[in-house]
Image (cartoon, rainbow, N blue to C red; front, top):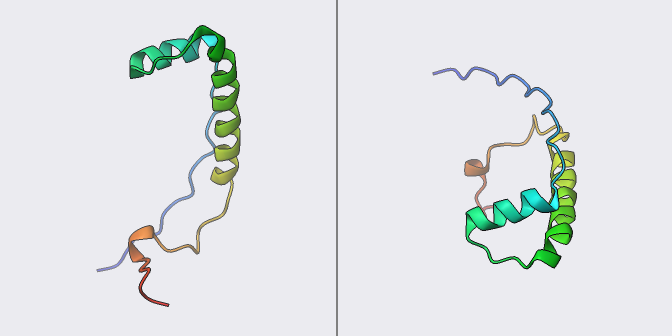
Length: 75
C-alpha cells in the first residue's frame, strides 16, 4: 500500500477581530457567565490567542511525523 503525499494547505483568510458584542454573544451561546466590564478584555485576549496560533500555522511541519506515531515510552 502506498501513501499519497499531502499537498500543502493554502493560507487561511484572517478572521475579523472580536468585538465586545461578539464576545458577549459567544459567551452567552456557550453558557459562560461574563460580566459586561469583561467583554472588551476577553475580546482582546481572544484576538491575541488567535494571533499567536496563526504563527503556528506558518511552521513547516513537513518532516514531522503524525502524533499517533509518537510513543512517550520509547527513546
